[in-house]
Image (tube, rainbow, N blue to C red):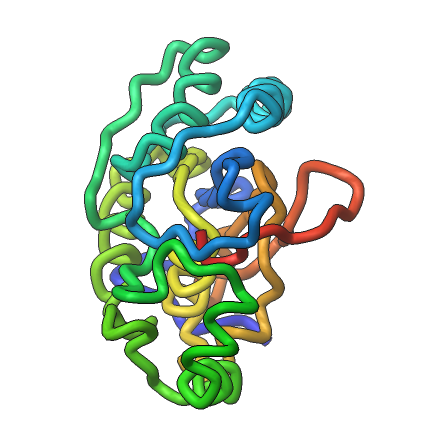
Length: 225
């Protein structure tokens, strides 16, 4: 079912309409260790750089018109690979950072479940939880989705915006733009490193056209990272 139009994005006058490509950063060491990164500034591994380079060549074929990016290093380095092949200069936003998760940051998934099991279970049930004393998912959407919608309004009618961000931030942004209830956002599966989702502008608002695209299925490492 199509979602209601969000933030003034009416039906496109002609053509396919505008598109938003939400691209997760490449692999980091903490992804491999399944540590919750959150806002911790962790660089890409060599594999992560190679992932970004490969994905950038694919995304360049879409002819993107604009590029915005989280200001964290792993996202910046990912975006740099698209800049190298398109010449698009990114605009960096702190508001596109991953969810701040307080004391959860730096812990592995097993450590989180062992120390904060009730909080973790409540989050997985879809309850509003300040994981580790950090941000609510709705607060992440409050800061990230408006940036995306504001930037997409600057595009030509069939333009494409690439957003380089993080697994959890992308999920909440998609949920908000599609008008889904926050309790259902977890039903959007996680993105693998350097994969992306595509939102398209339709007659009744934004629609999810592709999810976790860009490669054959791979394990999702460090979803909120």
